Amino acid sequence: MNFIKPILCSALLATVLTSCGGGAKVLSTPIENIDSSPLKVSELTETQQHTWGHLDLVSDTIPGMSVEKAYNEIIMNKPGKTVIVAVIDSGIDIEHEDLNGVIWTNEKEIPNNGIDDDKNGYVDDIHGWNFLGDTYQEQLEYVRLLASGDTSNPDYARAEKEYNEEYTKYTNLKTQYDRILQQLTYADNLISKKLNKTNYTLADLETIKPGTDEELTTAVTVGKYILSLGFDDVDAAKADLKGSAESIIERLNYNLNKDFKGRKTGDNPDDLTDVGYGNGNVLPVVKDESHGTHVAGIIAAERNNGIGVNGVANNVQIMSLRVVSNGDEYDKDVALGIRYAVDNGAKIINGSFGKYYSPHSDWVRDAIAYASKHDVLIVMAAGNEGLDLDKDDHHYPTDNIDNGEELVDNFISVGALAPEYGPTMVADYSNYGKINVDVFAPGSKIYSTTPENEYKSYGGTSMASPAVAGVAALIRSYYPKLSAAQVKQVILDSGLPLKTKVIVGGDPSNEKDFSELSKSGKIVNAYNALILASQVK
Image (cartoon, rainbow, N blue to C red; front, side):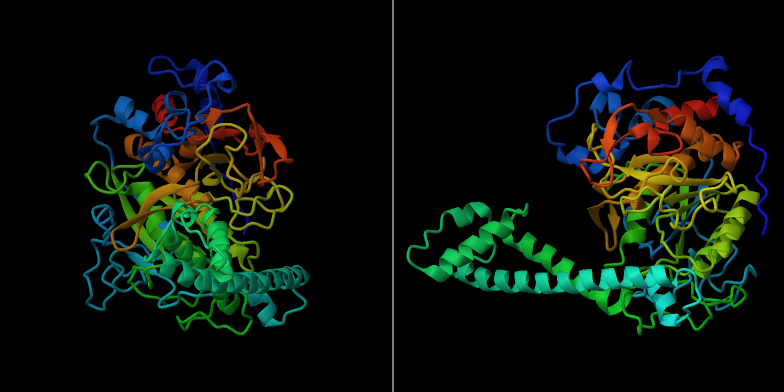
């Protein structure tokens, strides 16, 4: 399909920074020379840890998005228009105490009557749609390719090489973790008896005098080593190691298992016309399926309700589309999920997922173009492999082909920031690229909602993307006449352009100018975005 790029008021947007009269001034940089400002060297307080993405670079010396400043100085108590934001992700706990008041409801559908009342092709889609049915575990896309045996596929050799590397890596990791857990279990039994308690800290271990007891000496040495890795106590260490070991086993048993069949919906994932599969239950299948709930909270957790966290945006309804399994999503589900969101009133779509093989990438590109045609903005995570996507352009979904011209102007790719301004400001895992990444936003150590009324801190470009989707929702709420293309341009133009050199890919020897890591060279700033949005005619 040919993509026609809509006309964008680029000339206007290029001049509003200097030519518009009235209103507050958009900050070109936070101060005269941000690189000479005092860096924050003290540890973040607990409150700052939970809210750093909303803080302000000038007043807090933390590279947040100035969200609270925007509410305090611009939004205040002004009413706004409700914006539907579709979250294409894993299941969302729509009953969560901090989300249940912001969940989209399809008023045209009568709940649980088994009838497609609004005739949109989805029966009882009250809060969105679950394209996965009961599926939770899935293969990675390149494993599905290898399982097909299609050696004529141009990606087959690349997939085979990656599979061999990954399978060896995770097999070795399983052996290592099994050994560590075995040693810790043995040491823990001896230490617990000596201390007469089951949980203990590094300080507790310092009080033990093993004397000539060689077994106890070895146990204390093991305990000290593990707790010195940053764990507060042995219970935290055991939980972390056990969780990591389980993730490794899942990787081997499901994601990298060529014989595993995860899909349970009965449709043909290679036939885009085979529709109607799935169901209307958008809740997580298991508690550990927390990704979608976390993403939803970043966007729109109920603000100022006295519990939990504040989302970036008010005036939002979250539409839940369960598409992302514990493995790689299917292109068909992504394409249909985007089209569902567009057809059912979403004005913004957040996609905190991605992969490096996409057999039906054309279906997804067509859906992105469909969203563009209907004035829907799509915000996507840039990925977590620390790659320069301009050199490794196999990341999907994307808005171009082979680093070529953008095919649409409604698509924002987001890299992740860590909460320290300076050389380590870019998260070590974040992908980057002057062509393929548009902007950066807070993504590491983000505190948000998780299933069953809980809250945790997660990190990834998965967390940076919904932060930007929240800013987009603010713009579309208070300036609803702006098009998706204009909202994108406002977000990119209004960010803070920083001059500092930063480490990328977690490699201290790989230092780059921050301005070269994305198309805009900026970090998203909600305060500036609302000012600029108010000036676009």
